[in-house]
Image (cartoon, rainbow, N blue to C red):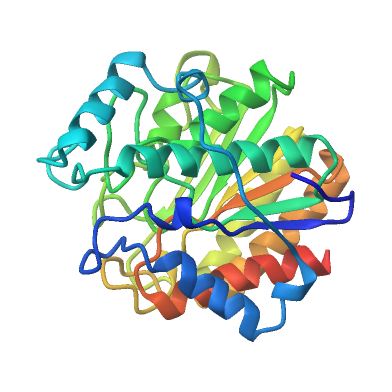
Length: 318
């Protein structure tokens, strides 16, 4: 990735656009192009650097995932039959390659931010936060967030990583993988798991073992809007101020906006813009500006365009 210290890198690549489950599926392959069309319409396309990532190698995928799971994904996607989990995540021909491209884009973004080639970066088709180390879940095959966290440590020597998640669904694949890790700072505002998949992320879940007390889950009731989000955000910000992270990773799923077909939160895009702006300020204060955002969920196309362009706009203004 080429750029300068002030660059805002936004990823545009048909290899990540290909990550989807068909035109009729909520997670369809059109989501990438819908976002980029909106970015151009609002005049931001000329103010960012468009970037393509690399496809993640097996070794990079194994930073988070087990070799046996990766091989299972490859084999099932070779035939394109059945599911990679209990019934949410179909095995489609070639989808393993698209999933590896999503992870590769997130890795390229991470390396660019760490190396000073970008001030901030945004990868729209990424943030697949439900996948576990050895399983797929909730439309997520490989967990790019988990891979980035592991590679920040092994490749760049960064221990204290702050993972912030504002998707309507709890980021369970990240939470449970690092539940006992005191240096993974986890803050997640989401719809209450008693009313939405995956049923996790209760306020009492604050970490286990050495990680006890280092995690922050803030479930909101169905129908919660911007006022509830801004109130919850104050807790997130206080948590981050006390933690002094070295790198911030934002999963900014747009399915928390009003009108999403599979969730019941009612934010506007102002929530996403606020989170991105405040995290930019915190990144400048504690992390030498190092902030990476990944798109996450969002199944109303207008909403994801609004939310993700609000994130990019906040990055450009910061």
